[in-house]
Length: 114
Length: 112
View (cartoon, each protein chain N blue to C red):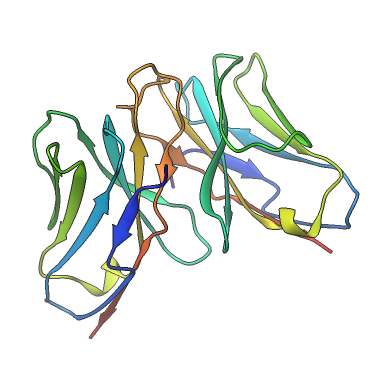
């Protein structure tokens, strides 16, 4: 158990809908990262937050957005969902926004878009 | 740019050794190794830093060759629990604003 929690574990929804994925980082970690894992694209970095502020953007679509709240939990919002958005979404956290800090991954949310 | 991992898959007998490589065409700042079992979260193994020493975690060790921009993961006397997909995640800058770029993974199967 990494100490990172994610809810829900599974999500099944229809195309065109909007969903929100939630992540709570490990106690003491200020930085949160979101990753998407699919069979064809592999594990891809989406976005990073540090202490409430957006820090870096990766391959995140415009239909997706995220935020980190004052209590440091983070939410990833996915809208106008398409079949291709079906994937495992992981949140990871680290103490600092540093390339030398370990990122601990949560258990993931499996999103299925029908 | 995505790092290249090799081999794509390895099948070993318990007790055998394996080496997994992670190569980059761009200068690396750090390399992070993870193991993932099917449907589960990636589990952190170790970090290799530019200019840093070889790391070790139990019977797993890793090195970072700055000249080749390559990291290698060494699994010695493999155990059944080592089965899974191994990913290297790379960081290219030291600015603190960068997610990891992951390779496609190496599937490792350990047979009794």
